[in-house]
Length: 93
Ligand SMILES: [Zn+2]
Ligand SMILES: [Zn+2]
Image 1 (spheres, rainbow, N blue to C red):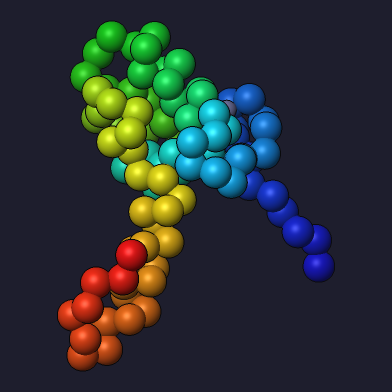
Image 2 (image 1 turned 90 degrees about the vertical axis):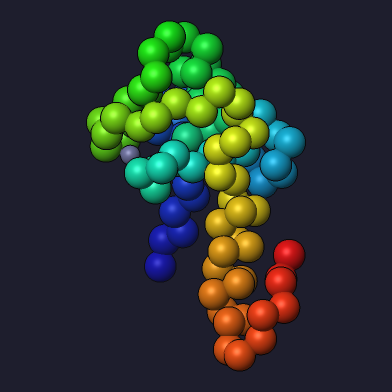
């Protein structure tokens, strides 16, 4: 089986694993992702309320801060919390 490494659809670089890394993946509201560097460029370049997803061309409301975008860590936290839902309301971080 072939392993597919996720890459940014704009710069085609493979995502970095660390959140502080410039190539760390950021997720848009449509569920698609691109690297922090490219998303930052888009945010800075486009002066409207909406940005277009480079993957699915959906119009997405622009967030003013790059850190407001969902990261891989947020996704992992969501997955963990849905896995650990069985009767306990302990929060998993
Ligand atoms: Zn990129
Ligand atoms: Zn999309």
